[in-house]
Length: 317
Image (cartoon, rainbow, N blue to C red; front, side):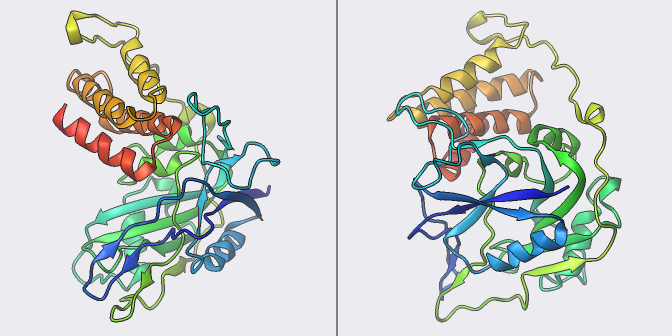
Protein backbone atom coordinates (compact mmCIF):
# COMPACT_ATOMS: atom_id res chain seq x y z
CA UNK A 1 0.00 0.00 0.00
CA UNK A 2 1.46 3.37 -1.02
CA UNK A 3 1.10 6.71 0.71
CA UNK A 4 1.95 10.33 0.06
CA UNK A 5 3.44 13.22 1.98
CA UNK A 6 2.27 16.82 1.63
CA UNK A 7 5.02 19.33 0.90
CA UNK A 8 4.59 22.97 1.94
CA UNK A 9 6.51 25.49 -0.17
CA UNK A 10 6.76 29.04 1.25
CA UNK A 11 8.11 31.07 -1.65
CA UNK A 12 10.70 33.61 -0.48
CA UNK A 13 10.34 32.62 3.18
CA UNK A 14 12.77 30.72 5.40
CA UNK A 15 11.38 27.57 7.01
CA UNK A 16 14.71 26.76 8.63
CA UNK A 17 16.44 28.10 11.70
CA UNK A 18 19.52 30.30 11.28
CA UNK A 19 22.61 29.96 13.45
CA UNK A 20 24.70 33.13 13.79
CA UNK A 21 28.42 33.40 14.48
CA UNK A 22 27.73 34.37 18.12
CA UNK A 23 25.73 31.18 18.65
CA UNK A 24 22.31 32.84 18.64
CA UNK A 25 19.61 30.84 16.86
CA UNK A 26 16.96 32.69 14.86
CA UNK A 27 13.55 31.10 14.42
CA UNK A 28 11.49 30.40 11.33
CA UNK A 29 9.94 33.04 9.10
CA UNK A 30 6.19 33.49 9.30
CA UNK A 31 4.57 32.35 6.06
CA UNK A 32 0.94 33.42 5.72
CA UNK A 33 0.45 31.78 2.33
CA UNK A 34 2.15 28.75 0.82
CA UNK A 35 1.99 26.36 -2.11
CA UNK A 36 1.04 22.73 -1.52
CA UNK A 37 1.94 19.59 -3.45
CA UNK A 38 2.19 15.89 -2.71
CA UNK A 39 5.04 13.42 -3.14
CA UNK A 40 4.16 9.75 -3.52
CA UNK A 41 6.03 7.37 -1.19
CA UNK A 42 5.74 3.60 -1.08
CA UNK A 43 7.93 2.73 1.91
CA UNK A 44 10.46 4.06 4.39
CA UNK A 45 13.22 4.04 1.76
CA UNK A 46 11.16 6.38 -0.43
CA UNK A 47 10.47 8.57 2.60
CA UNK A 48 14.20 8.76 3.32
CA UNK A 49 14.79 9.90 -0.26
CA UNK A 50 12.24 12.71 0.20
CA UNK A 51 13.86 13.82 3.47
CA UNK A 52 17.32 13.89 1.88
CA UNK A 53 15.93 15.80 -1.09
CA UNK A 54 14.46 18.51 1.13
CA UNK A 55 17.22 18.61 3.75
CA UNK A 56 18.58 21.82 2.22
CA UNK A 57 15.33 23.24 0.82
CA UNK A 58 14.97 25.99 3.39
CA UNK A 59 11.70 27.21 1.93
CA UNK A 60 9.91 23.87 2.42
CA UNK A 61 8.46 21.72 5.19
CA UNK A 62 5.84 18.94 5.36
CA UNK A 63 2.48 18.32 7.06
CA UNK A 64 0.51 15.17 7.90
CA UNK A 65 -2.69 16.40 6.33
CA UNK A 66 -3.79 15.71 2.78
CA UNK A 67 -4.66 18.39 0.24
CA UNK A 68 -8.35 19.23 0.62
CA UNK A 69 -8.90 20.62 -2.89
CA UNK A 70 -6.32 19.97 -5.65
CA UNK A 71 -7.58 23.07 -7.49
CA UNK A 72 -6.54 25.34 -4.57
CA UNK A 73 -2.86 24.75 -3.87
CA UNK A 74 -1.14 28.02 -4.87
CA UNK A 75 -0.85 30.95 -2.48
CA UNK A 76 -3.13 29.39 0.15
CA UNK A 77 -3.18 29.30 3.93
CA UNK A 78 -2.60 26.14 5.95
CA UNK A 79 -6.17 25.69 7.18
CA UNK A 80 -7.79 22.60 8.59
CA UNK A 81 -11.07 24.41 9.34
CA UNK A 82 -12.92 27.27 7.61
CA UNK A 83 -11.97 30.79 8.72
CA UNK A 84 -15.28 32.31 9.82
CA UNK A 85 -13.88 35.83 9.54
CA UNK A 86 -12.29 35.76 6.07
CA UNK A 87 -14.38 32.98 4.56
CA UNK A 88 -11.23 31.07 3.56
CA UNK A 89 -11.98 27.39 3.07
CA UNK A 90 -9.84 24.56 4.46
CA UNK A 91 -6.85 23.62 2.35
CA UNK A 92 -5.89 20.52 4.36
CA UNK A 93 -7.82 17.55 5.67
CA UNK A 94 -7.15 14.86 8.23
CA UNK A 95 -5.51 11.91 6.49
CA UNK A 96 -4.50 8.54 8.00
CA UNK A 97 -0.84 7.96 7.15
CA UNK A 98 1.47 4.96 7.02
CA UNK A 99 4.46 7.21 7.63
CA UNK A 100 5.02 8.53 11.12
CA UNK A 101 7.20 11.30 12.52
CA UNK A 102 7.97 11.50 16.25
CA UNK A 103 9.55 14.58 17.83
CA UNK A 104 11.80 14.36 20.90
CA UNK A 105 12.96 17.56 22.57
CA UNK A 106 15.57 17.76 25.35
CA UNK A 107 15.71 14.00 25.88
CA UNK A 108 18.52 13.32 28.40
CA UNK A 109 21.51 11.42 27.01
CA UNK A 110 23.42 8.82 29.03
CA UNK A 111 27.10 9.38 29.70
CA UNK A 112 29.16 8.36 26.71
CA UNK A 113 26.50 9.15 24.07
CA UNK A 114 27.48 12.27 22.17
CA UNK A 115 25.05 14.35 20.05
CA UNK A 116 27.01 13.62 16.86
CA UNK A 117 26.30 9.90 17.37
CA UNK A 118 22.86 9.99 15.77
CA UNK A 119 22.45 6.22 15.87
CA UNK A 120 23.25 6.13 19.59
CA UNK A 121 20.91 9.05 20.29
CA UNK A 122 18.20 7.39 18.26
CA UNK A 123 18.50 4.16 20.22
CA UNK A 124 18.08 6.11 23.47
CA UNK A 125 14.88 7.67 22.11
CA UNK A 126 13.53 4.31 20.89
CA UNK A 127 13.83 2.87 24.41
CA UNK A 128 11.14 5.32 25.55
CA UNK A 129 8.62 4.14 22.93
CA UNK A 130 6.08 1.30 23.06
CA UNK A 131 7.34 -2.23 22.35
CA UNK A 132 6.05 -2.14 18.76
CA UNK A 133 8.89 0.25 17.83
CA UNK A 134 11.73 -2.00 19.00
CA UNK A 135 13.83 -3.67 16.28
CA UNK A 136 12.12 -1.68 13.51
CA UNK A 137 13.91 0.26 10.78
CA UNK A 138 14.15 3.89 11.91
CA UNK A 139 15.19 7.10 10.19
CA UNK A 140 16.92 9.30 12.77
CA UNK A 141 16.92 13.00 11.87
CA UNK A 142 18.55 15.72 13.94
CA UNK A 143 16.24 18.69 14.44
CA UNK A 144 17.62 22.21 14.22
CA UNK A 145 18.85 22.50 17.82
CA UNK A 146 20.41 19.04 18.15
CA UNK A 147 24.07 19.42 18.99
CA UNK A 148 23.59 23.12 19.74
CA UNK A 149 21.51 22.75 22.90
CA UNK A 150 21.64 20.10 25.67
CA UNK A 151 20.01 16.71 25.28
CA UNK A 152 18.78 14.78 22.27
CA UNK A 153 16.57 16.81 19.94
CA UNK A 154 15.52 14.32 17.33
CA UNK A 155 12.83 13.32 14.91
CA UNK A 156 12.33 9.61 14.33
CA UNK A 157 10.54 8.50 11.17
CA UNK A 158 8.78 5.15 10.77
CA UNK A 159 6.66 3.18 8.34
CA UNK A 160 3.50 1.59 9.81
CA UNK A 161 1.83 -1.58 8.60
CA UNK A 162 -1.47 0.29 8.25
CA UNK A 163 -2.55 3.94 7.92
CA UNK A 164 -3.15 5.56 11.31
CA UNK A 165 -4.88 8.90 11.99
CA UNK A 166 -3.68 11.68 14.28
CA UNK A 167 -6.12 11.00 17.12
CA UNK A 168 -5.07 7.35 17.22
CA UNK A 169 -1.43 8.41 17.44
CA UNK A 170 -2.13 10.78 20.32
CA UNK A 171 -3.74 7.97 22.28
CA UNK A 172 -1.18 5.31 21.34
CA UNK A 173 1.80 7.50 22.26
CA UNK A 174 0.22 9.39 25.17
CA UNK A 175 2.83 8.04 27.63
CA UNK A 176 5.86 8.55 25.36
CA UNK A 177 8.03 11.69 25.67
CA UNK A 178 7.07 12.92 22.19
CA UNK A 179 5.44 16.19 21.16
CA UNK A 180 1.78 15.43 20.25
CA UNK A 181 1.47 18.62 18.18
CA UNK A 182 3.23 16.87 15.32
CA UNK A 183 0.18 14.62 14.89
CA UNK A 184 -1.99 17.57 13.85
CA UNK A 185 -2.93 17.61 10.17
CA UNK A 186 -1.86 21.25 9.65
CA UNK A 187 1.16 21.28 11.97
CA UNK A 188 4.38 22.19 10.17
CA UNK A 189 7.07 19.49 10.35
CA UNK A 190 10.31 21.29 9.58
CA UNK A 191 12.63 19.12 7.48
CA UNK A 192 15.42 21.51 6.51
CA UNK A 193 18.81 21.62 8.20
CA UNK A 194 19.64 24.97 9.82
CA UNK A 195 21.34 27.73 7.88
CA UNK A 196 24.79 28.33 9.39
CA UNK A 197 25.99 31.86 8.77
CA UNK A 198 29.71 32.67 8.26
CA UNK A 199 31.57 32.23 11.54
CA UNK A 200 29.26 29.46 12.76
CA UNK A 201 29.57 25.75 12.08
CA UNK A 202 27.43 22.63 12.12
CA UNK A 203 28.65 20.34 14.94
CA UNK A 204 27.09 17.28 13.26
CA UNK A 205 28.80 15.34 10.46
CA UNK A 206 25.40 14.13 9.27
CA UNK A 207 21.81 14.99 10.14
CA UNK A 208 20.06 11.89 8.80
CA UNK A 209 20.99 8.29 9.68
CA UNK A 210 19.16 4.96 9.55
CA UNK A 211 18.91 2.24 12.19
CA UNK A 212 18.27 -1.11 10.44
CA UNK A 213 15.43 -3.41 11.44
CA UNK A 214 12.04 -4.73 10.40
CA UNK A 215 10.38 -2.82 7.58
CA UNK A 216 7.25 -1.63 9.40
CA UNK A 217 5.85 -0.98 12.86
CA UNK A 218 2.92 -3.23 13.71
CA UNK A 219 0.28 -0.66 14.68
CA UNK A 220 -2.33 -1.77 17.23
CA UNK A 221 -5.80 -2.42 15.86
CA UNK A 222 -8.20 0.55 15.69
CA UNK A 223 -10.24 -0.71 18.65
CA UNK A 224 -7.08 -0.65 20.83
CA UNK A 225 -6.35 2.94 19.81
CA UNK A 226 -9.83 4.23 20.57
CA UNK A 227 -9.76 6.39 23.71
CA UNK A 228 -12.16 5.39 26.49
CA UNK A 229 -15.28 7.52 26.96
CA UNK A 230 -14.42 10.94 28.33
CA UNK A 231 -15.27 11.20 32.03
CA UNK A 232 -18.07 13.52 32.96
CA UNK A 233 -16.87 17.01 33.72
CA UNK A 234 -17.89 19.06 36.73
CA UNK A 235 -17.00 22.69 35.98
CA UNK A 236 -17.54 25.13 38.83
CA UNK A 237 -16.35 28.37 37.19
CA UNK A 238 -18.91 31.07 38.07
CA UNK A 239 -20.71 28.33 40.08
CA UNK A 240 -21.94 26.56 36.93
CA UNK A 241 -22.01 22.77 36.77
CA UNK A 242 -21.27 21.13 33.44
CA UNK A 243 -21.56 17.34 33.80
CA UNK A 244 -21.56 16.70 30.02
CA UNK A 245 -18.26 18.36 29.18
CA UNK A 246 -19.86 21.37 27.50
CA UNK A 247 -17.33 23.66 29.16
CA UNK A 248 -14.45 22.19 27.17
CA UNK A 249 -16.42 22.35 23.92
CA UNK A 250 -17.47 25.93 24.66
CA UNK A 251 -13.89 27.02 25.30
CA UNK A 252 -12.71 25.44 22.06
CA UNK A 253 -15.55 27.02 20.05
CA UNK A 254 -14.87 30.46 21.54
CA UNK A 255 -11.19 30.30 20.66
CA UNK A 256 -11.79 29.00 17.14
CA UNK A 257 -14.39 31.71 16.41
CA UNK A 258 -12.40 34.63 17.84
CA UNK A 259 -12.30 37.71 15.60
CA UNK A 260 -9.12 39.26 14.25
CA UNK A 261 -7.60 41.52 16.90
CA UNK A 262 -9.00 39.39 19.70
CA UNK A 263 -7.55 35.99 18.83
CA UNK A 264 -4.62 36.01 21.25
CA UNK A 265 -6.77 37.37 24.06
CA UNK A 266 -9.40 34.68 23.44
CA UNK A 267 -6.73 31.98 23.34
CA UNK A 268 -5.17 33.20 26.60
CA UNK A 269 -8.62 33.29 28.24
CA UNK A 270 -9.37 29.79 26.97
CA UNK A 271 -6.02 28.51 28.22
CA UNK A 272 -6.68 29.92 31.69
CA UNK A 273 -10.10 28.26 31.76
CA UNK A 274 -8.57 24.97 30.63
CA UNK A 275 -6.06 25.25 33.49
CA UNK A 276 -9.00 25.29 35.91
CA UNK A 277 -10.37 22.13 34.32
CA UNK A 278 -6.96 20.48 34.56
CA UNK A 279 -6.91 21.30 38.28
CA UNK A 280 -10.30 19.58 38.58
CA UNK A 281 -8.91 16.50 36.78
CA UNK A 282 -11.53 16.99 34.07
CA UNK A 283 -8.94 16.93 31.29
CA UNK A 284 -5.22 16.21 31.08
CA UNK A 285 -2.74 18.92 30.14
CA UNK A 286 -1.59 17.42 26.82
CA UNK A 287 -5.18 17.01 25.57
CA UNK A 288 -6.03 20.55 26.67
CA UNK A 289 -2.98 21.95 24.91
CA UNK A 290 -3.74 20.03 21.72
CA UNK A 291 -7.38 21.19 21.66
CA UNK A 292 -6.38 24.81 22.26
CA UNK A 293 -3.69 24.82 19.57
CA UNK A 294 -6.05 23.19 17.04
CA UNK A 295 -8.66 25.85 17.84
CA UNK A 296 -6.04 28.58 17.47
CA UNK A 297 -5.07 27.19 14.07
CA UNK A 298 -8.74 27.31 13.06
CA UNK A 299 -8.82 30.96 14.14
CA UNK A 300 -5.78 31.67 11.97
CA UNK A 301 -3.06 32.18 14.59
CA UNK A 302 0.48 31.12 13.61
CA UNK A 303 1.48 27.86 15.38
CA UNK A 304 4.48 29.29 17.25
CA UNK A 305 2.50 32.27 18.50
CA UNK A 306 -0.41 30.05 19.56
CA UNK A 307 1.86 27.58 21.38
CA UNK A 308 3.46 30.40 23.41
CA UNK A 309 0.07 31.84 24.39
CA UNK A 310 -1.24 28.42 25.42
CA UNK A 311 1.82 27.75 27.57
CA UNK A 312 1.41 31.10 29.30
CA UNK A 313 -2.34 30.64 29.91
CA UNK A 314 -1.99 27.11 31.25
CA UNK A 315 0.80 28.23 33.55
CA UNK A 316 -1.02 31.27 34.95
CA UNK A 317 -4.61 30.03 34.86
